[in-house]
Image (tube, rainbow, N blue to C red; front, side):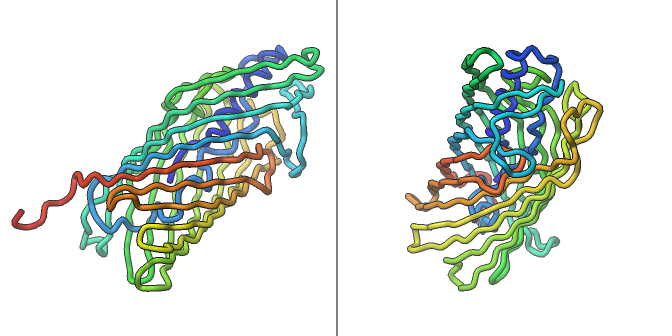
Amino acid sequence: MKTKSIILTTIFMALGILTTKAQLPEQIVSPAQSGGYLPGIMGVRDYANPGQDGLFIIDYNIFVNANSYYDGNGNKVNAIEGPLGNTIPLDIDISGYINSLMLIYASPKLPFLGNAQYLFIANPNYASAKVTVGLGELLNGTTVEGGASGFGDLTVAPLILSWSLDKFDFTGGYLFYAPTGRYETGADDNIGFGYWSHVIQMASYYYPKPDKATAFMFMPSYEFHGNIKDADVRPGSRFIMEYGISQYLSEKLEVTLQGGHAWQMGEDSGSDVYWDPSVKDQRSVFGLGISYWFLPNLYANAKYTGSYGLKQNFKANMFQLQIMLIPNLLKKKESGS
């Protein structure tokens, strides 16, 4: 459901490498401020009402590759403007892996909240990234490589509520990203973003048939941020829209289609913003997935997601393997047990 974008982690690293090799000012911030919430990571039914209480464990394994950058006009380019008005070539190949472990506690139904279930989510993650940068004429055609790995920023959802009706589910609330990952302005091995982010979202599900074999998902989110550590830069707010269809072909086999869009709404602000803040980024994604219940408490989903409709963003391809385990822990004891 929630994970930091490994794309942005590797972009920060790439810009750090470029900064070092070009002998630009050390304490600059990457212009690639595209927010922390990446549409298309969560599965179509990940926000559906759980239907039972207790602990849920979801492990996302995400493999990413990106090598094309699109400017603020949506055009593919091979260079960007640096903080001194100079041109920085962008012949770059990005690959990364992120393991995002999500721990979810679902309460029993709460009658005083219309039989809603309270959900608490904690989401640590570990990321590894590799960047190859061709510097072209900047350093006589030199190619340099960089990499980083470590624990990234922590996601916590302290207030999520979920309701289940005959044909609808509604799940929504508030979550935040804490800047626990390694970050230093100007470094080329950052694994965190260096700022707090806050997200408010509401997922809606419609089930046209009583067996709920078919599900339509629609989820808007709004994200806003604090200042970047050791820099006078506050990334602009973003509006994200996600949607999808899930269809069970049998009791165990599921196929999914999903999409999403992220639009920057507010301008990046602060005295250390050297790029044009009126240029706002955007990203769209489309994904295909197939899932299977191997056991009543063990679920796996394989999914491909690609990006398009980009402005001030890297084009990325992602392959994801998601595993969910329901260990039957922290469940409310039945009366008389």
